[in-house]
Image (cartoon, rainbow, N blue to C red):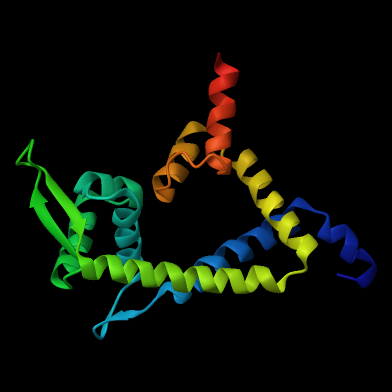
Length: 187
């Protein structure tokens, strides 16, 4: 690629896709690393962190809810929960209304671990965004929201995003805005 073609290449969908792929991968890895930590000398893997965060945001959860949120099988979710039980980060109890169902809850230690993970990730992200010029910070957020509005075109992706978030009905959330717009357009 010659220098005079740089601008033309930069304006292609292929280049945008390449940058987006790199962005997603680097954010995922760096955010996971920022959240990572040990609990009494034991590693908390990204999958375990995701389960802990789901329960933290959603409250006590049935195993099937955890599996659905993580998009894994019920047996895989059960294995992750078992590892968290052994680490003392969650407890299992029978559902009061249906003894066949198990309810998973954070222990006090589990809640502390999640809070620490979230604080580390937030500090990492804030450091990056704060290092950007002020004008770019706003453009960055607007660009991400715009991208999400288009990329979450179907209901399945929109619902999946809400399941992952755990912060239902935050009025400023782009996902909530999209859901409201779609509901109004159906009327």
